[in-house]
Amino acid sequence: MRITGGTASGRILKVPKGLDVRPTPDLVKQALFNSLGDRVVNADVLELFAGTGALSLDCLSRGAAHALAVEKSSRHAQFIRANLEAAAFAPESLEVRAQDVFVALSQLAAAGRRFDLVLADPPYGEKNAGRRSHSLAQRLLDDAALPQVISSGGMLILGHARRDTLDIPAGWREIKALKHGDSMMRFLAPECAA
Image 1 (cartoon, rainbow, N blue to C red):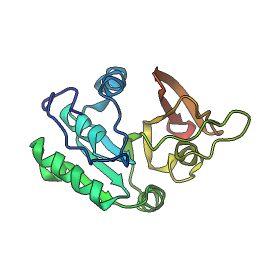
Image 2: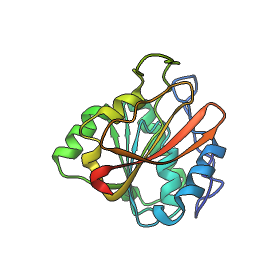
Image 3: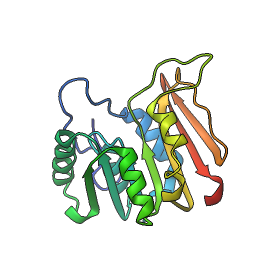
C-alpha cells in the first residue's frame, strides 16, 4: 500500500499483519482522489475507521491543511503515527485518536469541530438483501452527530461493500457513487451543508 498522489506520492505505508485491517485499495484511492480534485487542497479532513491512516496521509500529500484520524485500535494508531513520520509530514498536520468512532463523533460535534471532508471506509458488512443493513457504514449514516461535524459545503465519502445495501436516511443527499469490484465509495452531503 502506498500514497497515490501529491508530494509524498509512491511512499510505501506500513500495514499491520493479519486480517484486522482492510486497506482501501490503491486503485480505489486514485479514483476517489481524481473525483475530489482540488477539494482536498487546504481542507480540514476527518478520517474514521482510519486503520493505517492511508486516506488521511494521501489527503495531506495532496495539500490538505490538517487531518484527524480516528482508529479504535491503539496498535493500529501506532502504525498511523509511524506512517506519518515515514511520509515526513509535520507532526502537527495529523492528529490521531485511538478511540471508538461513534464516541469520537459525539465529542467532536459537542466541541463544535467541523471538517470539509469526512472519509470513512469501515469494515464491510454482510449481504443484506431484503433487510436493513446493520453494518458500520449504515450506523454512520444513521448517527445524528455525523452531519454536525461536516462544514457547510463539506462532504462525506463513505466506503462499503456492494453487497451491503445501505438506506440513505432523510437529510443526506448523494452526489455520486464510484464502484470498483466489491467496493463502493459514496459521496454524500448533509442537506444542511448544501
